[in-house]
Image 1 (cartoon, rainbow, N blue to C red):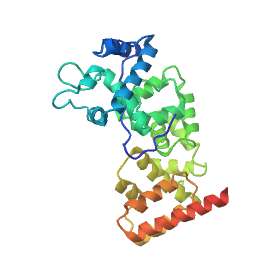
Image 2 (tube, helix red, strand yellow):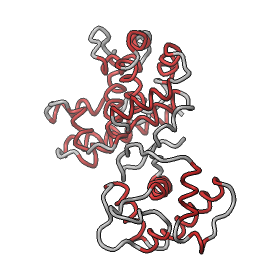
Image 3 (cartoon, one colour):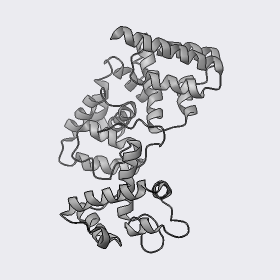
Image 4 (cartoon, rainbow, N blue to C red):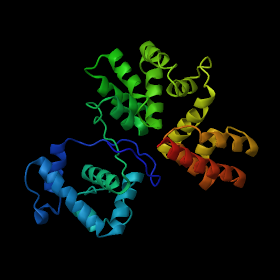
Length: 309
């Protein structure tokens, strides 16, 4: 599973799609089906149609952008419907001219191809492990998150599921980790909170859990401070928040001199997202002194990385 690492598009919420047979039936009923002649079983028909969609949209950037606009806005098409979108069955054939099921399916594929972001489909996480669940849930609104979690828990022992999520927290991405902590704290009752408590003494991870759950009895030791700051900021960065939000998560009302001192310690942590967080400060911080401190910290980070290898 690819992790989203492209700042061109914030993480998108999940979509609902019908089953493969329904989508394949829509392909066979599309206006261009007579010309393109999709053949084979449902999976083969959909694979062939995906190729046709990629080919035709790649030839017309305007069509590609219109498909993505319709997907992201969920609005109706304005003016005349492009013949290619209609012919491929990607837009409803009657008002309101929004994307059809097939259009949502195709747009999801195109966005994955162009940005690397795999937009989740409701119900698709049920058979995955805990890491896949947390990765998929990163963009879910609260109601849909509860629905997806219920599907994942079906047939699983709740206590064992809580333990599985807890065991995944150390190795998943920052935003996935934040989702996992929230699930255990809010959705798994006493067992979930106990699972988090058992991790409090873990280096770095325990400090992040304490910070996210308000456990003032578990303060970070000096070498954990950089890791916690980066992890919290990286979760915002991963979600696609504005750079100002990422900066504020570390600045926390400090003046420029205090921010400069805080930035300087980030290089001494070994969080895998440190470089990306520092780059946000370099590119977007309004104070040149803080941006300069971030550049210096990034150089130090790279030098320390070379020494570790």
